Image 1 (spheres, rainbow, N blue to C red):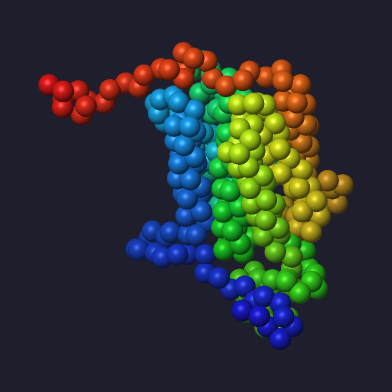
Image 2: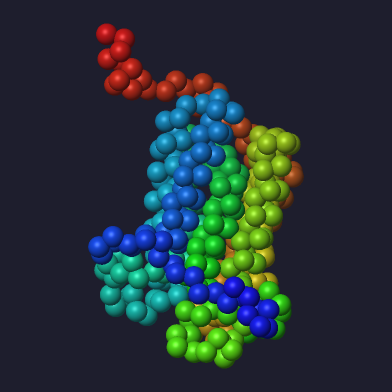
Length: 296
């Protein structure tokens, strides 16, 4: 809704529906859609490049676990360390209270992909390149979930597209609520643009097989190179960030930017393994029990 000052009054209920004590929030739904889309993308990769679904299924489980646990643990370590170091069990018991960090999720997925590549004797870069397509569109969805929660908001501004986050100021008259940058939408837009670029690179120019490493580098830059600039218009998430020259989000983005540039350099020079070994590409899938029964 637009008010008399043309700002967008945002009073969205983050709960999609509730049954008894169970609540389904839009934020959780965005995560679920992200994982479903990721599974669809990786299924498409397997069919396009000719290897069995068993590898994809194993890898996807590791990626999902890494993303969720990494996001949660990352938040607790990077943003609320003093609290969780004294109550480590609260990392899991207070999971529903929120607290997920994108940098932690990235580290968790990197570990999950490394485990899968190691188990199946595949090039690690194969997973790195292809994960960035679902990560970018999924990141956009998660940021929309943040918008539904009225969190990760921007600084006070007078731009005409500013939002007035009503739920952050309960009981305050609309005319007194400050207008703030919709920082969630800025990040989502950057992720969507990166997603489109990566899709063109993979599906039109086959960069995943022709120049391994470049897609991963471009994807990481699209996510983390833009992050420090967006942080300039975002409110700090924790009090300890006040007065810091670079806040936590900006500091954590630096090693990812360096990694992205390194991978692009390696990809341009062609020093990373191309494709997957024939032993993986031609590996037959294990027959399911149902198929075996049908043949008896």
